[in-house]
Length: 463
Image 1 (spheres, rainbow, N blue to C red):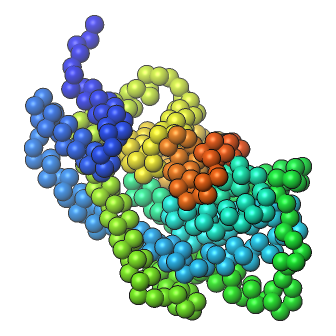
Image 2 (cartoon, rainbow, N blue to C red):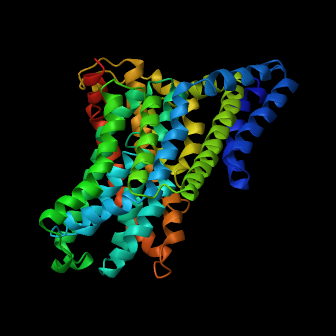
Image 3 (cartoon, rainbow, N blue to C red):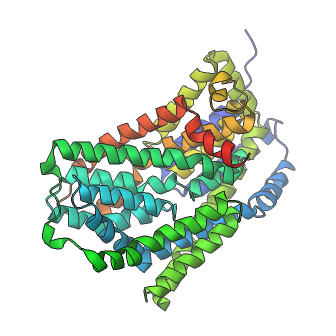
């Protein structure tokens, strides 16, 4: 029997400790960094970690996160989304879409889905999107006698599209953790994001066609015609679409980096608020405060994750994970399905930030070494490490979107319940979200089976 050395299992114990202590209620950044420091000292006691290595962590935080120019885009994207919420752009957009879709079965629900897709392409802040859409759309849907489960499910699912459709804060974080170009990930996530929005749209249309009582149509008395319709389009629809083209178009066309485009988006959102006459001092102050607090929370998490991942790797975590995967004998596809299942299950209990910071640094090196050969070659490219990681990152992103929707800790559900009328029960919300979670899984399987969905745009535009 081989000798058993407890220090060989420190990385596994470290990972398990993180899974347990996240439930302690302490700030996640404190938990992640605290476990890293604690196991660093424990490693010193067993001569598998040296005190001088702690200084390497400081240089990694300062020289990695603090000096990463792409990370500058994060607070500006947060500012852009918060300003759009306060400026009333979303409210006007929903009103316009509602009028345009009034003759279509489930028109109001489809309007919410389209608004979620458009707003997702201007910001990646899920909490703000879900709360905003709940406050704007849910009372109107209830007055139209919409089924509560259909209404809440549509709002929750549509509001979370911003975590996947660029410019997504999650994709910026993933690019840093996986050392993949953020522009590459932005391009790769466009088609999968629109695919999910399309699946939502088809489901709502078909269900409302078969069960029209779930979504009564808008009365003809509220229709808008002629010059009033043109005026509404110019006031409510064109501005957010123009901002999307300005931000994403400049990135995809190569005119601007994501950081520069984020600055343009922040300025554009401020300009829209000014044009609408809503750029008051109180609004600007509130937007800046919320942006600063959200940005500080995210960067504190980045620093904590750097501490954890450095100690984990220094204690031999990468080698332990690779050995465990090899000994399981699952093969490339078995490992991929296992990791997707792990991410899906973690989504029931943890936020996307926690899952991303825990999973990617540990499993991305494992995925990079797997050979999917001919499957990725179908996309017209050779299976390089960058292409494998890009494909994997998009699948994780699609998977992580479900973490906002799955009970008991789906944050989108909590955001919705927190601002919904008291007549809406949590049981109705859970019932309404089930079909959309199934659609998420279908979307994930499609991206897995057809890698072209994720790789076609990067390979075509970045050639």
